[in-house]
Length: 353
Image 1 (cartoon, rainbow, N blue to C red):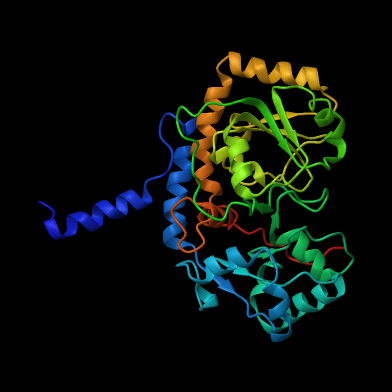
Image 2: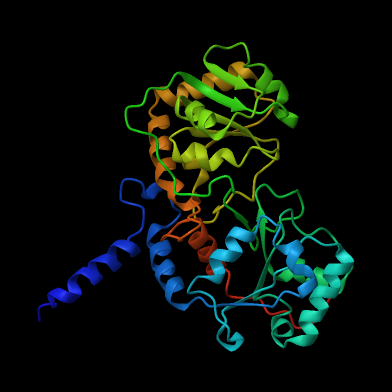
């Protein structure tokens, strides 16, 4: 039976909106594109989130947190439900506070509502920009051990549980990604911005006098920064320092990230979805400037650079925040997807010290 012409356009529009941003050519960046697409469609239809009311005295503090963008997107999304009995997950909002205050806040939730005690918080999630540290408080310990934590990347060591917690895509990208124009020439092999680089300072300083690298200490405005990124093959970042949020910008503009780190990284955004080894280079701070340069040149010569650039631009769609109207597979929806993937809560039968 033919589809009526009046229905054809809406159906086509729906297919376009649901179409994933990957093709056979760039599917290598995902652990399983088939699973992602299938699970994403189920998530769009079935995920429902109930948000606990925030006490009046906490409203002003909460609105000042970097989580406002994600929270506002959730409030206007189809994932929101006002019926907790329909909820897949429960969101516990709170501003940065002391351990004692957080203990009281979680205690209020568990004594006012029946939902926390059903799983000891395992079907709940919360936001903490830098993670929740060790504590002897029962309420806070259950929150940290059982609930899904959403934190800002990078997260301090020992305050992130890889199999459970997730990180927000870097907040420096608040609009759609704008991929680097095809054919735009690159003047530099590598680019670095910012002066303080912690354990990577020696490696970075060793490149300052090399004409193939642009090493700058001044945090120029966004326009200048984007120009520098687009004119460089690789963008250098030191893990655990301010400025690493530029990872998203580098990817979307075709500059392959080079992440300098002294320890394994377990908190990269979308780490259980995207193969970061396909879109970024990871090196130790003790590598030495000459060895680093040779490694980057070798990557360009063996064809690895072109592949990583192409896959990085494709993956950048997932790091774009569309503040006014979230788009399929963008940063907001991929955070929701990661929460959906963690919906099978582990039930803890009793409190254990």
